[in-house]
Image 1 (cartoon, rainbow, N blue to C red):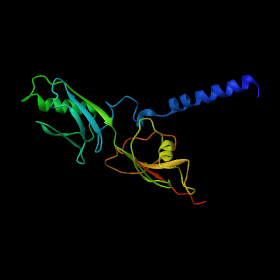
Image 2 (cartoon, rainbow, N blue to C red):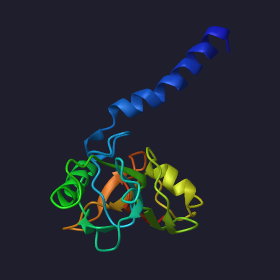
Image 3 (cartoon, helix red, strand yellow):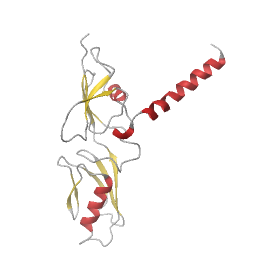
Image 4 (cartoon, rainbow, N blue to C red):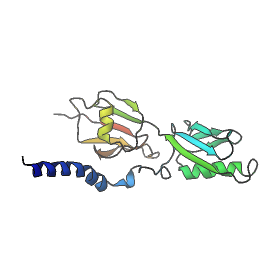
Length: 188
């Protein structure tokens, strides 16, 4: 192989990930740095900062009912709410009785885990990592078994609270926090 063919091959190999990422429909995935659009759910760990109020600031876990328990104001419902909505809810509860003009910041520290089952070597829950694909999730779970269908997965989205229906997705699409991933068995 000549030098220019090798250089062309390397260039193409480097550009493929950019093409794949730009061709992916990001409307159904969690975008990097867009925690404003992400809807909180049970198991998420958030950092709440109430400026100049160290006693009210700290790390909190969204409980099984979708609530965050804060000092003074008790429970804040965070289930299916964006970070901005939770910030506003906390500020509204602090305003009338405790602070005149509360400034609240909420940051997601740790997203809820995803679950993988079926034809993988180690089916269980794993911590979510931003930008991870279903192929990466399978690798984290020890890889496919010899009986696995390797081109797609069935997924119940973590934010699909109503229908809880499985969706057939390409193995290279992105995982969302709380996804339940099922790798099917092939028959041949």
